[in-house]
Amino acid sequence: MQETNTERPDGVPHNSAVFDMLIWMDNTGGVHADMTTPSINGKCMPFQSVLHCLTDYCLQHGEVNVEEGSIRIRCISELIINNIHLRSNPVERHGAWFDNIVIGGEPDEHNIVSSIYGNLQFMFFFPDTPMIQYGVIHPAYRFHPQYSVFTHMYRMEYEDDPIDILDSSDHMDRKGDCWVLDDNETSNQSSPHLNIVSLEYTQSHVLMIPYHSLSKFRIGVMSQSLWADKFVTY
Image (cartoon, rainbow, N blue to C red; front, side, top):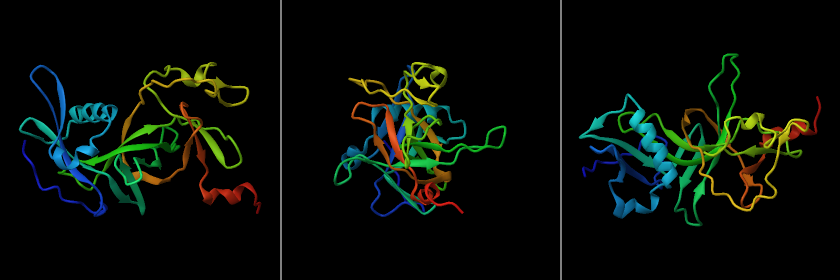
């Protein structure tokens, strides 16, 4: 397996892990993701769900350079972008650390931008374009009603969610304009639905707390910059 010099582009702090992974498909159609320095960075190997998301994205990405049959990605655990310090690290000193972030979305047909809220589970870039960094995120649905004065309720996306979840009376309380919460949930075996996004439009961190230990919901605390709007009139 060929190794290369894993240079740090601008924005990658000196204490960030930096390592390469090779993604490739064998003659039988089997997909592989191999770390080039497992003895050094083996603890940084992402979750299986993240690996599936990475391989699907890279093998479908038409503009990626392929070297000796493999696609190389450079992986990082920390990044400073838009003056925001992002962390996605399974081996922080006091345990795994995956930031919750807000990313500005693309304008829709009405030129309305809807931000993406989610949990950042991995970061990487392609060595040929180090100025464009990507994140694997576990997003929340874009309907996040107010839960208290300073909080909103976020429902994270999962692979087994019904396609019509936003129209389902089992999940939505239209009269109250809110989610039906999973107060009686006794297990959560669902796999997260992951997306890959450009980190270029990262706007901020967001504090998101599990509704309860088995919940698919997160209570998100409103940005302090908006607190005054709740009490001050001009």
